[in-house]
Structure formats: C-alpha cells, structure tokens
Length: 57
Image (tube, rainbow, N blue to C red; front, side, top):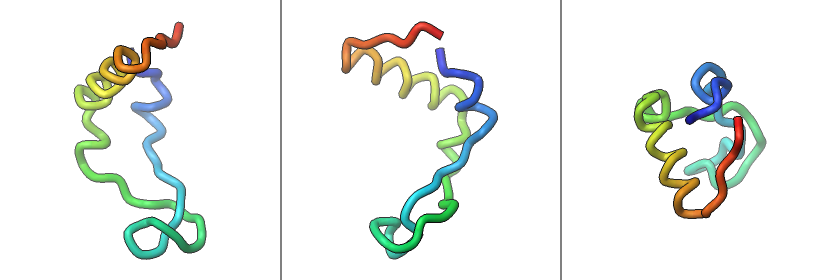
C-alpha cells in the first residue's frame, strides 16, 4: 500500500544541473509514469519484497 502523501504530493527536489547530477537544488521534473498510482503501488510492493522490510501504515 502506497502512503497517501506519495499520491498527492508528487514532487522531486534535487540538483537542477545537467542530467540532474549537480548544480543548485531546486524543484525537478517528474516523468508522467511517476504520477501513475498503479506504477507507484507496484514499485512500493516490489521494493518491500526485495528488501524484506514492510512499513506498517
């Protein structure tokens, strides 16, 4: 289960330079699939399974 905040507050902050690998910190851009709830849930589930750790939300 993806926490509600991940589905409503989608933003990326980090380096804003070339290929987002350096430079000043700022709001970056997210690809369209980053807003897809089904993709978020799948990534969350796969990550929990791969690490063997489950969050209890």
